[in-house]
Length: 199
Length: 375
Image (cartoon, rainbow over the protein chains, first blue to last red):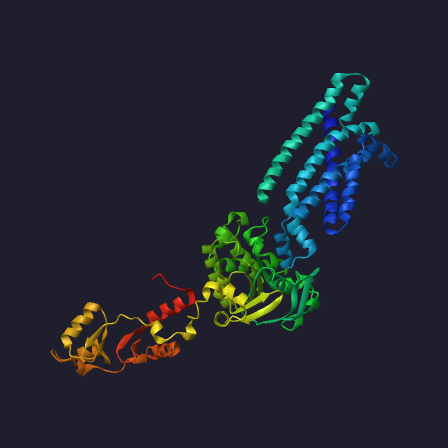
């Protein structure tokens, strides 16, 4: 158990770094899709397509550019996490009541002010829900990192498969499942609070 | 002062504003009314450039607004919408403070504004400022909506059916409040509604629109008297009571018919007793044939009367009289001038028909305006 703890920490760290980058990038792309007519279809199509690439293949392709190591895994996780975040940001922004947008415009708020003070705050519950989905998914996909030489809980699982050691597979899998459940539970709680407050 | 000059707007083939020319005077409460699709809301929204006209010009205080930065323009014009549109993620205070913040007022100034405005609608700062809009009733929310529009003291406030979604009781209260506020602060208010009651109640000037044009622009009184078009007539509906309006009413329409008269042969003490029993301070005295002789007041009897004398000796002609078929305005002017506070109405044969007092006048006026009163 002693050597499992650093792996768990490393696993979470990799996922959190990737989610932080994906959130910033995803919200920005969501805003651009909302702002620029026609670009919404293109951006959503691209993030949709990224999601359809099998994770193993995506990591293999990225390895060509970024080599072996944590960077490749983080880039892969970011690309994978974009879809729910971009999509939810876009849906959230377009879904803000037209009356509120009308009021904001009528009061003399510029486009950026409307975005920062009204549209983004009101979309935040939905954006957060996208981030939650991305986080939980990324926690399990990060296991693949072992194949491209990055750390995390993929290592005990992979070694277990190679040595046909069921115990080793489980020592890697169970923490991943528990982490996913814990993240899902707490982030759902926060989501409920956000939705309640927005009403 | 807002001026529209040949403003056109169409969506596809549908013309919304048809060569609209309109002047709105500063400090007036102007109501835009008309059937749905008449262009009233579009007209309103061209003022703060939420809608851009296809052609024509709009001036505010002589400045062409199409040459102004729309964002800056809107900060100088208050805007209230039917759906209220308070931002649910901000407190009451933050909602009100929004435009002053955009205009970079200092925190002290903003604080003072929020306090003063909440006082204006009797919603104490301590109880309300930190609440979120969802914690307020619909009426309170729209009060805050109005305050938010007033926060940066814009000379012009646009209101798009602001009270349309409220229950009738709350609407009444808010109408009263907004009228008071408008008078007090001297704002120019442009107000869209489809409710003629509301228009007659609030407007200094009513602009009746249909198919993108102004059909009539007039004061409520003038519109009631001379509606320029059958559509306007149908909108006025119950408010038009078949020509029975103030202009062609006569004196007898305003009078109280049941009056107390005494024959001139009545004795002074009897008269005093009668007056105290009926709780009046003067009596109308008539000749034997019931024609009008004059009036006598209790003070006069007390000062000069001797017991057992006939009342006819004390009669004066100080009370104003008017023929029952006289013009109502004449009767009204006499009433205002009358030292006794009433005017006597006489029939053609000089018998007494009734009495016009300030109460009977007000009641009749009320009925002419709003129909039969219950009391």
